[in-house]
Amino acid sequence: MTMVQRKDPHLDIVLSLVLLIGSIIGIAIISLGLVLYLIYHPDTVSVVDARSLPLSQLLPQVRSGSPLAILDAGLIILMLTPILRVVMAIYQFWREGDWRYTWVSAGVLAVLLVSLYLASG
Amino acid sequence: MPTLLQVVLILLGSFVAGIFGALLGLGGGVLLVPMLTLLFGFDFHVAVGASIVGVIATSSGAASAYLRDHLTNVRLGMTLELATTVGALVGGTVAGYLGHDALAVLFGLVLVYTSLSMARGNPELALEEPRGQVMVGNGVSYNIHNYPVGLAIAAFAGSISGLLGIGGGIIKVPAMYLLMGVPLRIAAATSNFMVGVTAAASAFVYYARGDIHPLVAGPTALGVYVGALFGTRIGGRLRNRWLEWLFAVVLALVAVSMISSGLHLSLGR
Image (spheres, each protein chain N blue to C red):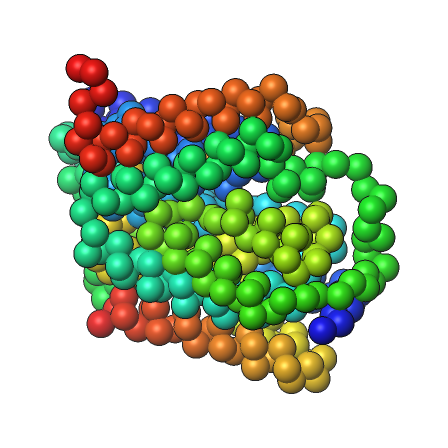
């Protein structure tokens, strides 16, 4: 099968920006949560004692300013960044009228959503 | 301050792993998991959970740069991701049923393979070699063969990623280059592109199982992300055979240590 790797600068740049911005925001929020946690809970005995919050409790806890929830939120943002990249790829392929790869990307998103569903259920 | 000290040590260790990962063309997981299990004594599931988040961080940073340089074949990447994500979902789920020892032995075997690849010269470092072989950004034409085999190997690489918290580039890059006919630099960039999505597919399984411990995964991700940025800067874009040989030996020793600990061998003690 012949595949021409098309010059598609717009697609490349959009996906590049999603990954860059998502990872920087995730890392920044992780840093913030880490610093806050160490300030407010310096007496934790071991790092493995702090457990991540269930996804359902995350948002209310972040609103109440829990450092652990902020740290978890940073990790979740980092984990969602590649998924957002797939969503953007679907949108870009759809805009270009490239149906084949719109469906391929939608298939990848479907697998990721199954993973998210299993994790939240 | 045991917690503060632990966090700082994980940060430093991951920073160093990020630097060497970038210099050697390794995703970082291959260095992070042994560090977290053998040096810090964490359970394998805790180490893999942290490593997966770290792998997402470094691959997002690196993939972003390769996309900007138009080195990534996004369409090929998305196609193979159909297989890597399913593999990762299965691997991440199966990992929950395997004990520390079984995972240690499996990881040791992957380290043996990685060590041999390092000794031969990691093909992923082709990214750092001078341009010329491939006309970048002008639309590259090449024939891609063996899609079924490529998808099968991608599924295998994905399941190893989900089981052991590594990126799996060391499996995918040779497969794309040797079996599918993808130019080496593009194979390496495209592999990196797939790593983040693959790791994300299993990361949520680990999170739901409670295997992502925020005070381990947080400093791991932060350290390895900054370390990889730093390593890319100081790397000088040169292949360093001495460093590859050094790590071939180090990884072989770590492999022996992991396999023997998993099998409860006492190694002459």
